[in-house]
Image 1 (cartoon, rainbow, N blue to C red):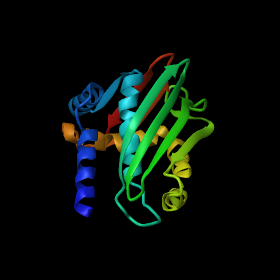
Image 2 (cartoon, rainbow, N blue to C red; image 1 turned 60 degrees about the horizontal axis):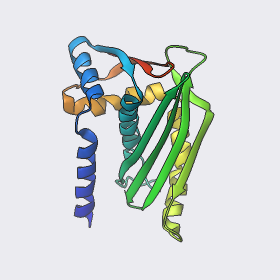
Image 3 (cartoon, one colour; image 1 turned 45 degrees about the vertical axis):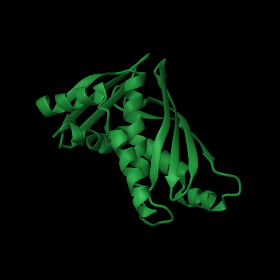
Image 4 (tube, one colour; image 1 turned 90 degrees about the horizontal axis):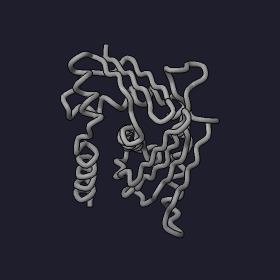
Length: 199
């Protein structure tokens, strides 16, 4: 069973790494060539980045305080950018060690304290819906111990930092092997301005 779970994790990770999306290639090539990237992301581009951010964040978590590999994938990611807000709705499927679906819904806005530089979670509000099989008390208990909502709230308090920390791993398979020192994000009417820089 362990071997089968390992195979599933490997296939899902490969699916996350590829196919290479155009936005990832643009960022990786610009960072490798100039040490910086500046451009705009539409809803689809932001969805690509946020999907992989979510996958990475869950991959780092522990179950019941133990470093148990979580086999999971992001089955849905919808992003709508309008009037300076980015509405995000996504669904995570955990295959192992428990079976569950977790749905997240939240809105990102420009930080009024750092306009043009940083984004934040609107009203510090995040809706999390956990779906397990009826009477699967082990899954319900594991989700409670993991504290998915608290983890997500903690991470989304500073989306700039989350992207700074997780984006380099997304770009490793494209030849970028550095780290990011600067991430500036600003939500416009229907897209997001992005500036990232290496040391």
